Length: 61
Image (cartoon, rainbow, N blue to C red; front, top):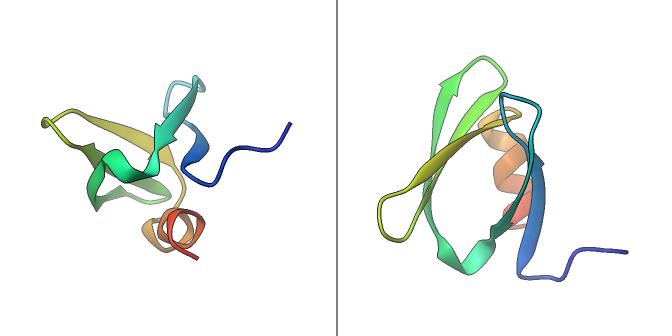
């Protein structure tokens, strides 16, 4: 089943699958080699696998 346009699936740095609601993302920050921190409305964040350009391209093609 494909993700809806407003949701993206990622794998965090602990190999846990997460789903991000695109509309709830405020900004991205490079968190190391092949790691990107995704910030959400309300101040929560998660570090996911992937360089910032790759993550950005998936969220906003």
